[in-house]
Image (cartoon, rainbow, N blue to C red):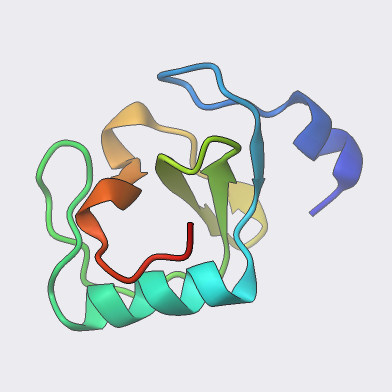
Length: 88
């Protein structure tokens, strides 16, 4: 993702800056999704793994990136507190 774009993107809920998920974070999230343990902030179960994502710099919320386009909808954020083995 373009670094200039990353410089201006923020979480729509907290206004916290975002950064790309690391490989370890993405792998941990996708393992939890495969196990049926991940829900959006509205409680909707996630079924498809993420290929790419952004996380708030405080590590609390993740947003998916579809085909290089960040999906920054507050309702679709993924709270990391629900993930037991998520890297902190």
